[in-house]
Length: 143
Image (cartoon, rainbow, N blue to C red; front, side, top):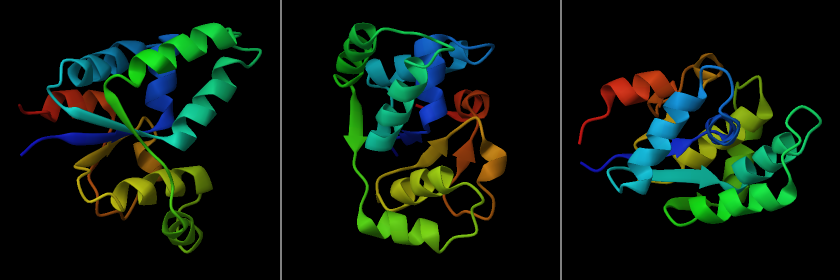
């Protein structure tokens, strides 16, 4: 079975900022996607959230550099939009964080998604789709 991983926005931000101890795992995951060993999926929302964070006072990454990075990612990452059902499911869920709910239900509602990868695993309780931290994903991925 081919692995098709939905990546939360924090994994994208970790890749582009190499933030703390998380950049290395994010780089490894995206490298697997670029090498076509696994399929990667990001939501439109993840790109929007990442752009906002990357341009913030904390990171101050230029719009030009962000766009160049996004263009490169689009060569091997599938981007999925959100459907009204994703929003409805999120509003009716027990998630404490609306953005996490939208990410989860968007992933859940794509039949080919194998798992969701996030650093906030504790926010995804009582869900049917497997959820991994980047480290857990890298330790468990089988080709």
